[in-house]
Amino acid sequence: MKYLIGVIAIVFFIFPVIWLLKASFNQPIDAISLPPVWIFKPIVDNYVSIFTEEPFGRFLRNSLLISGSATFLAIVIALPASYAFARFEFKRKTDLAFWILSIFMFPPLAAILPYLILFQKFRLVDTIPGLILAHLGMVLPLAVWLLQRFIRDIPEEIEESAFVEGAGTLRRIFKLVLPIMSAGIASTAIFCFIFSWNDFIFALVLAPVSAKTLPVASVSLSSWAYINWGKISAASIIITGPVLVLVLLSRRYLVRGFTFGLK
Amino acid sequence: MLEGSLVEWGNGNMITPKKKIIWYLLPVIVTLLIITFFPLVYALTVSLRDYSLAGGKQVHKFNNFKNFAFVMTDPHFYYSLWVTFKLTAICLVIELGMGLGLAILFTQPNYKLEPVGLLMILPMAIAPVVIGLVFRWFYSAEVGFIGYILQLFGLTPPSWIANKTAALFSIVIADVWEWTPYVFLICMAGLRSIQGEIYEAAAVDGASGWKRFRYVTLPLLRPTLIIVLMLRAIPVLKEFDKIFIITDGGPGIATQATTLYIFKQFLWFNNLGTATASALILLAIIIGITQIMFAYLRRQEKW
Image (cartoon, rainbow over all chains, first blue to last red; front, side, top):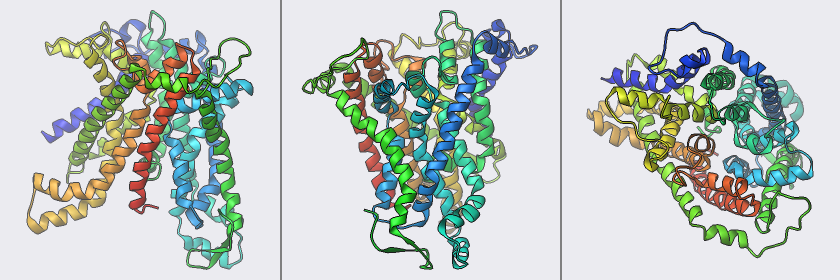
């Protein structure tokens, strides 16, 4: 009995992904046939067609550029502050930390509408830098919180001995802390990347045409009268694939990453 | 706020002048002020004016809180809050129950499926957009897998589009699918960390099953459960992607959560003033809940 529940649960939670994977290699007609066809000759037509009939190459490039840049900026900007949160004592430290975290909790729509007006003034609507900025606001708080957790994991004693030998703070950070926490930086980057990569609403409003990202593009595939589920499946797998690889790489820190370092 | 004398750090060997600390914090503070705080203040000014994006130069005059008055007297707005509340409550109860149940199952001693249990976290990695699309497909009347399965068992599938309750649950099911693994994962980590104590307690008084769960596991797991609850509540309150794709608020406004209400004020009525006003009200609600959550976290002395 307890194994039956376990098996049902596992099947339930992986089935839709298997389904998408199968449909993405199906002929259009097999993709939607019920009962489902499980034995078939896999074809890559769906993948080929979204890159030839639809400009998914450009959307993929946009997504990579936007998520990559937002992640890189978030890490660089967050690192000094997270070091200060982990190592220094200062007045109102907790207040400041929670103010930063609360930004992560904001509903995107509250920020998107003023962005839209401000972006029009600065000619940032539908541009890659515009969406990078919007995503930076979303992932920066996450980066600060995760990085400071990783810095706290490093015993202070390591830095103390270097301090006694006369190494200044910056020197200690670059020569000691950063190399030790490289795995932590990598997984923080992975989580920032995932949040930016999976974002839909910022991209939908702020980058509807030329800076379009993969999630917005895959939804627009479904908005016509005839819905080609094969194409949508292929697009979905292209969105999901990289994230799955990244999650696997950072599986040690999954709980930490998805709880902003609270657990 | 940050200047002053010297501050001690660690066991006192390392001393960093307080004046320098501000330089560590400044990049984050300035960036966040510019890209989040400033737009929100700007949102406040937008919410107090007549504002649409159409047509060239316009004078946006202060309109005497007309937008807030409109939103606060709009029955659709209150209904959207009710939808958001229903969604949050139903999703949290199911996700917490299933996630905790599965975590208990998978942490049982010698449970053979444990190594493959990690496969269940798959949904967490998937973009809400993709989840929305695949579930919309599953619910489809002609090519939907869920309807097909129900028919195999001789059941008539509900009309996911026309039936209000079914439409609400079509979103709940997708959200449960996406986030139960999250609760499962965190509860599992929580259970592992208290496993020793559970065994001890069980060995001492020989209690087993329900009693052990009720009087040992549950109290020990309480902090974990509260954190999960709070970390799940806020994303459901903000939920947009899946609702937009699966039901788009329909039938009628039956599944129009507050986020969709805001979006429609903006998209259909091209009224940035009322859209922003309602977004700010939602923001205030979420800030309120976040503050309760933070007050709890601070008491936990995680910080």
